[in-house]
Image (cartoon, rainbow, N blue to C red; front, side, top):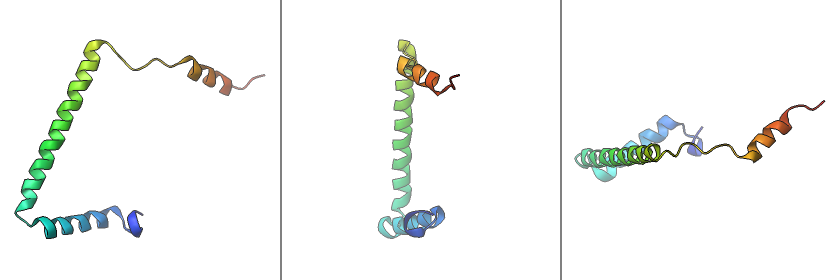
Length: 78
């Protein structure tokens, strides 16, 4: 259950109804186009940052000594 006991489908339908009510039928394609462009720009930026990180040779951070000692302490001791 989601917000106010409504499921995901009901919430989406309510949002679509309000979008139609406030934006009108002719503004929704413009809004969707802008949203799509923003998502594309975000994706391009994210990929560019990932490429820069890979090119610099920085990989995932190595596990610290603290995490390895925590893993060792979880093993049963005899």
